[in-house]
Length: 310
Image (tube, rainbow, N blue to C red; front, top):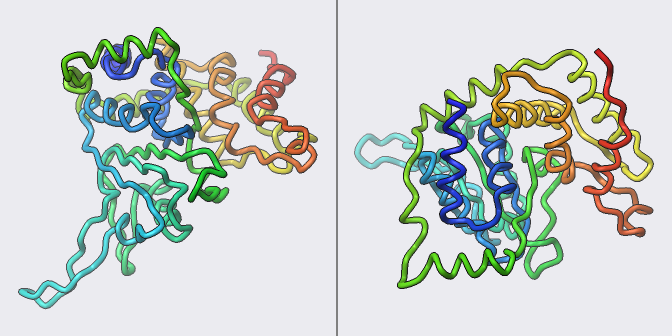
């Protein structure tokens, strides 16, 4: 199934110009069974990216535009009396899709944000003491405007830790922006040109193959050593959790899978360390005062951590 990954990337690129690294990172996260947080200014193509992936990979797609008045029951569903049977009937919420786009998640109330916690971690929701499984695969792509923008609030740490990666699209280059305009000449919509490359069963098969990638003991030691550095770094008040260790391992497997190998090497771990860890590391007040960036600390940790020998 590895060959499918190249075809998926080529199809998504029809709608998204010049963001190859972001496309590859999102695909790695899907293969790893993780969720994606995209933090960026409005209008750079976050929603188009999600739509392109849903269409290319044949996934059922759902979207919620989060605002302060969106309720938890809008996400998870609710029970209602059926007048014919006189019994309570469950109505599914918006989260019941293979790919769920949580648009501007940081505009929602904390109660509504927490409605996604169980879904993202366990692939299920619980309503009125009844548990309902979400469709497989299940992927959340959440977008948020930069913190401090009007009407936004910071996502809680428990929510942030459930995202496998955080990424940003950024503004396109001049050439890419011209290409974007050319692709939309005469009212054309590039999304209409995207072909479905695989089915939901294909995605599950690729996820299974990714999870079975071989990881040597020394690579596992390297992963744990990197994680330990985040917990002891003088500029960090909090490092990666065990959940982060699992996410880093899964993403390294996905990177190796897309490279065409059936085993993981330290280069795979290094390639995904920053997007996996940058949103999980909590800076100390001193680091914030010095305007140190988590991505810079991630690069320093990768550069200075010794790779265990055979």
